[in-house]
Every structure is written in structure tokens, then in C-alpha cells.
Image (cartoon, rainbow, N blue to C red; front, side):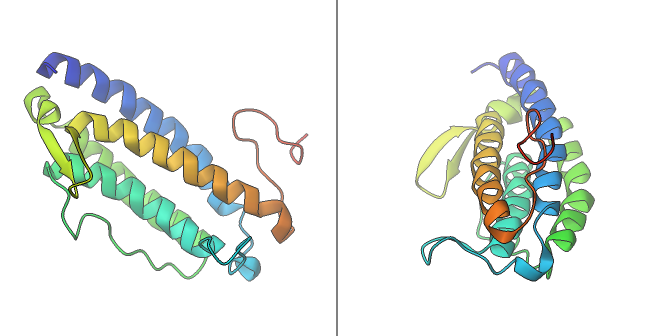
Length: 163
């Protein structure tokens, strides 16, 4: 991948991340605090842990891109007490993490990073993984909402609850 290609992809992925962040905040914010221990099965994270995982992972992926490496400290262990706290933490951390990536050179974005020995990819490709990971877990969390007695917010258009 050339540095120019990496810069172009970076701009596209950051636009996606910023657009998706609005939806992410709506979905996390829809989780009722008094029902945040809900999980559909024992194999699933409970809603609060999933809220924190989504927020921490999105910031962690951006941090790894900016740092040029994944380390044990890449993913902050967010332990916010309520879904609203997770949204607030995410809102505070996201702009700085995005700005760090925006300031990167094409060369740095094209450099290969190792994702904990699981896979290697150009740093900019981690931004695409970030989008996919966030959308995946946000969909998981949105499926928890109705069983918790909450309403599913509009995501890519009206939901059955927002019409």
C-alpha cells in the first residue's frame, strides 16, 4: 500500500467512524441503567460490560493506529458505572483519538502493525476493522434493548420503536 492510498483510506475510515459514533452513542445511551446487568445468555457480556467494551475498543483501535502498535495498554479497561457514564467517557476520548490519527503521515498509516499475533495489516486497515468491530457489537447491544424493556433508537433509518 502506498502512503497516498493509506491517507485516502484514512480519510474515508475516519468519516465512517465519526458518522457511526453518533449511532453508537444513541444505542449505548438507550440501555436502561437499572437493567444494565442483562445478558441474553451466560455466554454473552452483560449490557454494561458490552457498553464499556464498545467504547474502549473504538478508542483502543484508534490509539493503536496512532501509536503504530498494539500493546497490553492499548485497550483501556473502561469500568463506567452506567451506560450514560460510558457515553460520556466515549464522547470525551473520541475527538482526541481521531485527531491523533488525522495527524499521521501516509507512511505511518501504511506501516504494518501486528494485532497481538493474530493478524498483521497496514495501520490504516485497523481503522476499517474498528468500524466493523463497533458495528458488530453495537448490533449485539441493540438486540438486548427490547428484552430489557427499552426502545431501539433509529440506526440507519427508523426502528420499529422510533416510528
